[in-house]
Length: 345
Image (cartoon, rainbow, N blue to C red; front, top):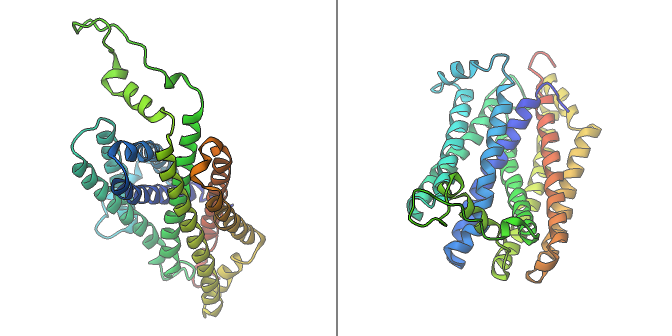
């Protein structure tokens, strides 16, 4: 693992996963809107939306440690008109900001559904621009043969789609498992006297003001048969997407290694050697097991009749997600390891 580039490995992979999750959730929300009522759609989608923000913030914070002086971030932004790095920061902050706005509107039930969808579309566009900016930082460098290729943007977007699908599936079954457990949150909130109202039993305090009790109780209510029926369809679709994208990534590596081997520069041959070692094969093995093998199992055991035995599906899907996440961290480490400059191969 390339420890020196660890901040960028964490940032790029986590940010791409967040973008993929948000876009996939948008597609899921549109599909659910055509299949069921608003409450059911929100019960499936909303908890996952709330989890994207903290993950994205973690990625942004991690990226700052790549700079010796964090305050240099402000200087980088000044070159947004000419620098892909500057655009990456701007679109990263934009994606996080609009995503936060969407989550707040969703939490407080503020605005109408069309307004929230407009914000969601803007957030998605920011996310796509973020991933594209990340890719162009590397693929626009003619002095690094392993980066100056279409494979980089392809694999960056593939990571977003595959990890996004795996994360959404894991979050859905994980949420279902949490909802099936007995919890104090499943009971009605205790009323707190409110001196500012005529009814002394009316709830008060910041939990009531921020809609905390209402939202938490809505989120934690046990999953019903209708919600589970829709959830397993999403899990099965996610398994198919993950498997197909994983196969596409494997094929892209074959093409990438062949192109590097045929490149006239010695630096390309040095980079090609990075994609032949044990670390590389382990990355492919984890990717294949997580996205293809376990994804195939998840597809077949995700049934509408399995609500009372959702633990098995949760274990399979979460395991697949963890393996794919590790594989993508390893893949991104290999990406940075392949930085051999022309003239220095």
